Image (cartoon, rainbow, N blue to C red; front, side, top):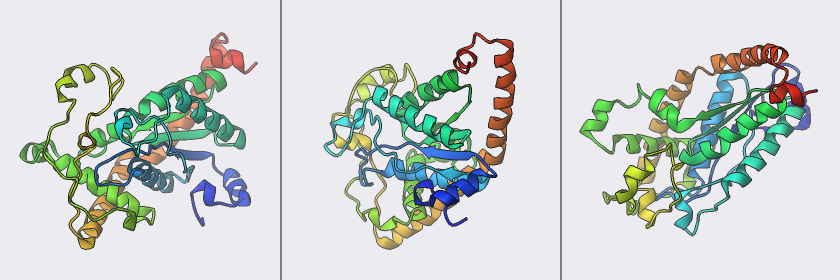
Length: 287
């Protein structure tokens, strides 16, 4: 296959793919301040993961979705903020188009923490409307599960920044996967050990999952984030190589062939459920 990235394909290549498979992975990103990394870093890492996941399960990738709800980084002049509601509607329109095109197994992913506020409502509403189960994979949750053999709790205890250092390497590795390594600046300016200006409100923020408890924004660009110092082009390349290895390990741990097979089996299961309970929204809407 010449490419798995749908916008880079010819229409005839998409049609040929859909003759034997129906999987598409949709990375949902942001453009927001992020210390010493480019504003689109959470888009890029989601796209890099999506590409590796698609390779693992013979899927395609729909790229080019960087403008969604950013959250507390709205205080940054470089952050493009889109409301949660606007994001849900836009992503839902894309999902419906993809279904019409023939992509029956759709997987939405993001490493942006608050992305669940956009993606989760969309996949639930989409099922009620169409009867087709589509999936959201929260990559922050995957970091806690599929990355367990990449970074241990003991390692974090010994070095509290260990998690962020490895995550930063994965960001750099993602740029390399997409052929954009030089977009990552060589800089030590954005590494610091200061606490967040909103730290006093952490107990309230933790009352719900990932930015879903209360509206707020960061008081200083340093709040998001203290990024690992990249000392030279050689150091940047070293981080990229380490990051790519970690991304590959995480994708292997996700077992994407099983994920897409489970989606297929879930659709068959739900079809029977809707026959049994015709008052369900999806069953009613299909009449």
